[in-house]
Image 1 (cartoon, one colour):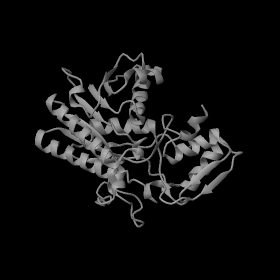
Image 2 (spheres, rainbow, N blue to C red; image 1 turned 90 degrees about the vertical axis):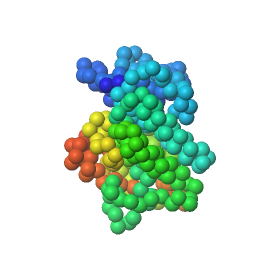
Image 3 (tube, rainbow, N blue to C red; image 1 turned 135 degrees about the vertical axis):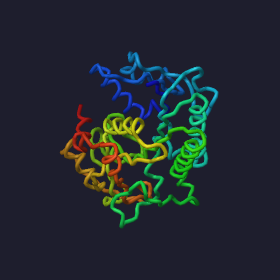
Image 4 (tube, rainbow, N blue to C red; image 1 turned 180 degrees about the vertical axis):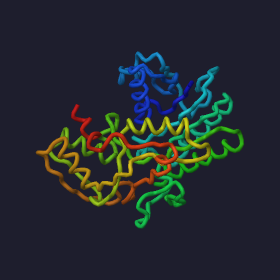
Length: 316
């Protein structure tokens, strides 16, 4: 397999790189991977553990600049995971939408030009819009949408448009495009000082005097470990049905209150949890839980790393 990976230096990308590195250490087969990144030198400086991988090449490029993409390369597969999810909320809404849609179209055009047949796009559970209170878990067949008249929906609407581009290219050019609708995750590469609740709790537990909870303590989330994330993405890339979407995440529900206390017990049992409710926290979604039945039944995927094990990784 010759694989082009966009977003390879972010959380999703590093999850995949760690998975392939582990396989290589075990003497198992790994693909030849090329990452497009705006700063190869900075990435290798920050993550030197990836510098000696014979199967990995970094190409200085930007998915928003088609002409900067690798030339004269024969790729069999593409994983398009380039999205500014960490700093995204600080980007103007119009730019965020344009970056998602333009980047996806550039990579789809690149796949057509270079005769790449298998294409995985990492989308988001945000494409479903708010989860209704009567819906315990969101299935792929749910047709709810984010509010298109709310500029705060730019990320989710952008992902919907990018998914539609995949469907159009699948139909018109025969690109075997498959979608991974990703929910919430945890792992050693998760930013601890961004807008991710579990990351903030872990940072507080490790570095502050107390663990602070903002927003509603009753908000419900689920968390998949990044090792499971990588395994699921690769399975969907290889075995997922073209033109279909698969939810990616855990279906083990936990309230934000329970999550903060779980982090406290595992990482810093001596520290208190303090609640400071603020409006409009947790992206306006009180419940965000995927139905992962299709991935389990069709692709035989499962959850191997528990939430407690995931939190405990931060003790290492």
